[in-house]
Length: 215
Image (cartoon, rainbow, N blue to C red; front, top):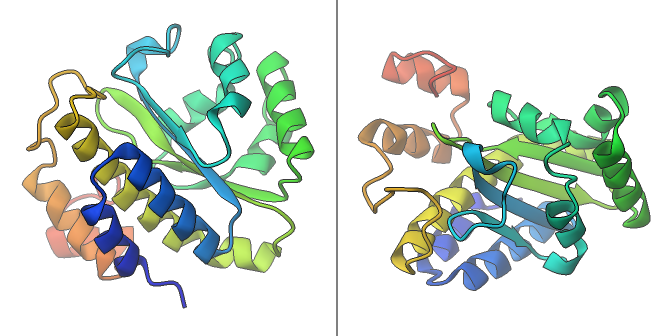
């Protein structure tokens, strides 16, 4: 059985972004996936993503994603806009099959096919001024496993991205303009506490007397 709290402890113990990447890589493999990437991008930087305060992490080699960042595919990517508008994980491959086709979509489809990816979740973790989250990739795994691990994948992504921003600030990599160690509010901390207890968004909203969308 996947133990997300064990990985939460490892995230908290990680002191660098490289350490966090390695822990996340272990976690996604333990969950039944084969790799991940993560991003934290200021919304205004979509046209110029390669700035110091933007973050891109992955466990399969940044060289494989660099053409996406340097050749204009990100600026054309409807998936990025979709992530920015959602609060729940969505099926990445299914989305790419249904969305309007352009050069970026074709590049992504080809990259996923070449890597043998059979299933993938896009998991939004957006903040007010940033589009951010993770994508977890599975090769050859069953559809049942993919569906059954959705909530664990979402919780893992939330815990990981929260720690990534904290470590980035501590190491003077500024992923958010004006962000400091107190950027996680008391209400957000409450939400994370109940997520760690296995509560659904609806249950947390009921407990805290706030809307499910706020959760």
